Image 1 (cartoon, each protein chain N blue to C red):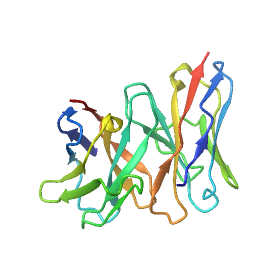
Image 2: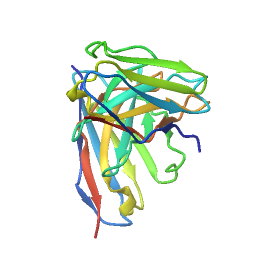
Image 3: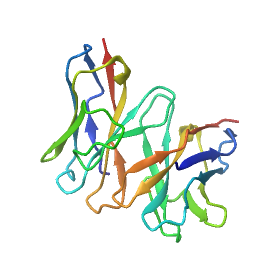
Image 4: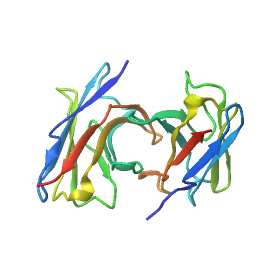
Length: 119
Length: 108
């Protein structure tokens, strides 16, 4: 059974960079059938797709965040990564990593990690 | 930017049927997906490709599509179905993922 687990600091200062890692186990990240994605959810609010990356490095980002988001993948470690620059309080959210199928939808999710932006 | 519209909340009595709608201009061209999210948990896929149900999802969950609107129906609602439900699709290019704002289902 595929499992995903987010990891990273729970507190980030305003204007700094939020960096998260997603560890994938029970399956290979080097799959031609899947993308690897980040979705976030501010407290009490809805889901927002941040972007997706293919194991070969092709990536797609939410246009509303495109200038601040970067994703990468390390197939040797079965991990993928999120960087979000110049964070503000509005970036406070639970961040989920998820497996995305080619028809864009998500079939496996991590448990989520809360990141708070505060000084 | 492209978005999907859902009603914010619905209420239903146990054993009754509830429908949740999701509207978007690209829905005639793109498949829709539905997720259930219970408090404190990650979303779970309950409907894919408008009408298909993943293995392990109860038969009382069904989906339909008509034009720019897709619908999630829960028949014979149970207390455990109380949750937030999100529709998800893609823009007309099929590249960019979009979620609806979510519908809170309350079981009375």
